[in-house]
Length: 574
Picture 1: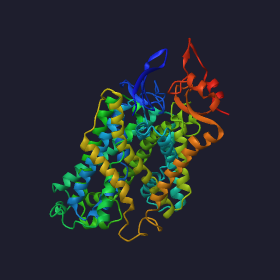
Picture 2 (picture 1 turned 135 degrees about the vertical axis):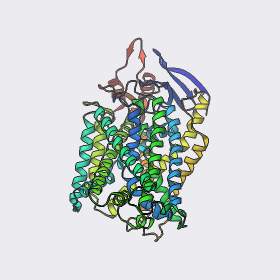
Picture 3 (picture 1 turned 120 degrees about the horizontal axis):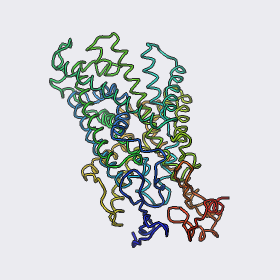
């Protein structure tokens, strides 16, 4: 990097300081959530001095935003499939502990990144933007377009519908299943649209029910293990617990992927960073992960204490259902369990909606997708209506359009690989941000992750990139679709490459051909929301534009007069 220069953004506001470092310009800004000031590269979305979404996210809510996303339906079903992949109870238990270690390492990465940008919501949207500021707008464009394209929760909505029909003891047609899935998701969206407070309260309430459900299974499992139920030999699975361990590489790999995804959701609270002080997040995020890890391990002990290993491996029912049947019989307990799982699935929809709406809103505030006002606005209910509408429309489309089977499985898998690429890039990005901050002499922040956590996370993310290329045991066409098993991987990479091509056309080639350049402009909406807008400035007006605007895109003040935003727009937009 080149030499550093320090100056102020606006002559009349000395609090906004810029450090110019080569072709990068770092702006010192502070939000209204009682966190420390931070430096971010000026091409990123502007810090909102006052969050238009409010400051209603507190410790209890942050804990259950994470728990709500981590605890979906996986813990009720995944243990049986992991056992089937690994072949032994002992190795299965080790894997659940390893999942906790991997998640804890990744959580430390998120905590350090959030401490650098304590007034920016959106999680990895922000961290990728700041780790890779050049070429300008490239990473934000690729991530934003990918986020919009795969912005659906159709699989979770279908799971909710499945368990609703199990409660009713009814076998639905495909269209009945899709109809209930659309209705369930629509209810979740409507509950969030009209009030942030209601949405956060709902997340808390369902989260408490989830924890109580897992706690009930855990305590019941310990009672079973103590020999106080009708289960004849509760310790049978724990004698010779490593017998039958599988040496199949695909099974071992698949089990690791499943247990890693079972913990996914520990990062959800980072999507609402600007709505709470960072010191609250550093307490609540680890608490949520520890609670879930303990309950996951205790639930697995409960399953293995009550259900014979062979029955768990071969059964088509979820592990929790087998557990309830073994302990309480096949009466009303099974229906009650289905209700709890359905409620857990609904809560997962709510918490994912809350987190992803903030991430999509932050993509819009970067200015790299059209209609930034639509994404950034919180009018009229103080909620992110634009992102909620996108999530609802894409999810309904993905529920109704693909037929059951190959097409549905493919679009669900398509979400995973680009995510893996960006997670790996974000982890590498932490190293780059550390170097940036050291070079500009930025002060220490409230959290720094351990180097061992960084190394573990890099290895796990690299593994997640390589693993999907490994063929299943039955060969190239033995995946969960009838065509080549890695088609979704190639398509996921192709989407990112198309984004890169689009970026170079939009930012470089077309402007060069038509004689203009792209500049960023700051818009402040009536509800207080702040966003970037990328505008076209003709080459003969560039000097005037750059003189009137600071590095962030705000209009400079001259002799007590601020140039109007409309003047800048007329100069830049046709």
